[in-house]
Length: 265
Image 1 (cartoon, one colour):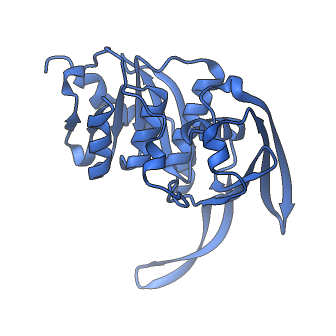
Image 2: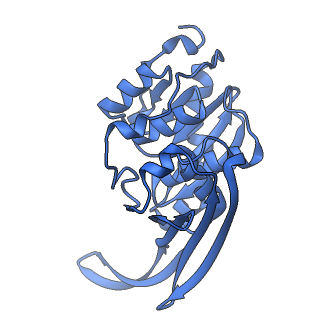
Image 3: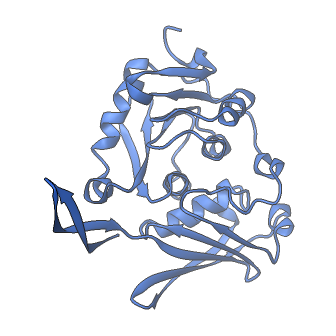
């Protein structure tokens, strides 16, 4: 998941050689029913979880019961690992809409390649969870996330996602070059392990963008907490779909939607 590289550092008016630890960015091609191809750049771990989460958050499946098989194949190209996930799923309308198209999703932008802005909201439902959370718990989450970021500690270049219960206890943590990939890995793990979303908190080390918020909405997580400010569309989606959205940027805290889920409000 990381490689060593020679670099130079400028310090005290002179240059010196220094070994740097770099995060690995590698492609995975997801081939659905031998006809729909998606290329994702990612950090190569929790691959089945990433593929499962991606299929779910992109609307290709509604549950893991629709997946007949996932085969992960690893190849080498000029000493660079490349992956292929051959997936067989039960066809649905969403899949048919995307048949024979190639999508490319870079690490910085999981929404790249969308044909329709409105398509990303297809099939979403308002969150029904009635669980409430304390701000004391919410405020403690960034420190807990930092304790589970080994890839970031080595490279300084990884995003992280965390899943906590209503008392702030750790459930899942994932890292990746892409913040949306980290969230997909968490959601894939939830689906594979049968983890209920209704009393959980999703935490992201990156900003709360529209796509990130919609991923949490799709699986039904009631509270999304980000370390950076959200986008305007993320806030609007949170309001529409009954998601409580909070950011903890720069040592502050701001609640943007459905504050009734916060105890004492």
